[in-house]
Amino acid sequence: MLGMMYCSKMAATSAGRALSLCRQFQKSLSISTALPLQHTNVLTSCKAQLSTFRPKFCLLHINNVGTSLAQQCRALHTSQWRRGLEEFFDETPNWGEPTVKSGAPWTAKQLRTKSSEDLHKLWYVLLKEKNMLLTVEQEAKRQRVQMPSPERLKKIERSMKRLDTIVQERENALRLLQTGQERARPGTWRKDFLGRTFWYRFKEYPIPWYLNRRYKRKRFFTPIFVDSFIRLRIESHLHRKILKKKADLENKRKLQEQFSKLSART
Amino acid sequence: MRLTALLAMAARVKVPPDYRYGTSRPWTVGAQRMNPPGKKRRKVFVEPIQPEDWSLFKGDTVEVLAGKDSGKQGKISQVIRARNWVILEGLNTHYRYIGKSGEYRGTYIASESPLLVREVALVDPSDRKPTQVEWRFTEEGERVRVSLRSGRILPKPVVQRRDGIVPEQWKDGPKDTSPDDALEKTYSASLKTFEEEIAGATGVVETRAGRRTFWY
Image (cartoon, each protein chain N blue to C red):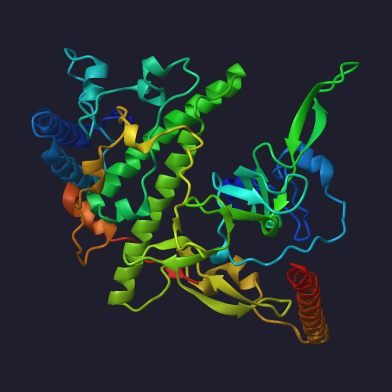
């Protein structure tokens, strides 16, 4: 449910303005129940006005004594769903059952045929189902009993993972087409203080690097005295490579010995 | 590290590269007793069979060529790829007691021993004799097992799902999407990103310009 914020202080000068805004908002809400799709349009336009004026937020008109608080809250829903906390729990016929029937998870192939809107709605449906199952799991732990059909959680998680993969795929394709960038997040190859080369992923900061004291303390170079240790590391790496190659050849030889003997016998 | 990744790591069983696989799965108590973390056993050489050449599946009827029950035919109940093993129902058994507690000696049962894939052979359904099998392609392009002696195709055995569901007899529940809805194509390629499309559909107009950020 949306948070309810009351007009705490109404200064004399901004009172009229705030009240008029709230009244505008109330009008928009009364239209909203008839036309759910247009509701969001009006909501955002009101929100834009509110942000420019910066008043104390007033989403409910508290002077309206006739309607109850619950009814006013219900009018704030941005979707047609009107259920409450019971969505955190399974359907009543399933309570106490040892197993609950559930279908197969969504496959990536099926999800690729869906539009962005459908995927967006599906994500939230899956999220709510996941929350419900996690509640059931926690309650089962509390009651020290087995959770009925825990495979449902796995199915939901896999479906959500696949959905995310599809969205990423589409984003990657568009970005490659329009900009040629292979990665969504910028980065670069850097050397750390031990001489190891690694992919450093950039972070988003509000200040430039020359003003960032913590960033300036980071060292992305190798001091000169580390060179001898780098040489030793290279030597050890080469030695391990040779040992592995020898071990693989030995393994192959032993396998051939054993299984050619076997095939000779048969 | 992400909490989900850490929990997933803890749930998965970490197996060393020279682990000796047995008839029990690595996460069971019996397997942990056989292979405690510090134990190193003599290496067992497993014949390298490529995944595409593997021709024995659970539910297949095979004949035993070597061992105590040689000449007998049985159904495969379990396949252990790591050791090239197959376990047949009721064949190649030895007897042991299980459920021993205190003075009670337990139940005397026959437990099957695994057989190597080279010690069994698939049975040709036309003459019910053991044959060698090869993978070939049909006219339609389907990859099937073909018996080398008679040329008959050996179909892959139909095994019941572990959750007991038969796809042909499935009835959708209240939360399941119908097959038509699931397969319906609503995607149309466009040059808009996911976020732009959602914003367009819900009528969200972003007039704010974000503050300047630096990436480094």
